[in-house]
Length: 168
Image (cartoon, rainbow, N blue to C red):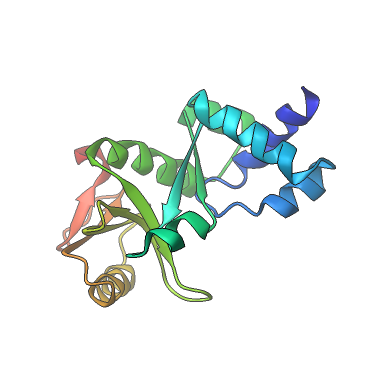
């Protein structure tokens, strides 16, 4: 069970990131199949959650690399001593998932959207809202033909399309 513990510790630094199974297997010195087995166990016990990439094609959603999120911010912080931004994104994930199905969007070496809710609305999690982040999110959401786009922030902002995290 030492490898499972090591996997959990590795995952803390990958919260909100796409998982590269081959790289994780190599770092742990175990097979890809074993990594998949451990990840399946952690997901089925609600210790971690996955979201798939956004696509209008179900095949692309199944093939794409998944992003991972932890069950609890306190545990995440205790195990991994992660950044405030990572904890905030994990918090936003948990608050949005109760409203529907979540995906993420990332173009190869291009723009990213943290969360897409029910293939209709784009959400980006930022500690502080910047005009440049709002404009980028709006451009990407328009390209994806999404109905709405919102930036969720921890710090108060009076920009439009910004949601204060405590209001989620």
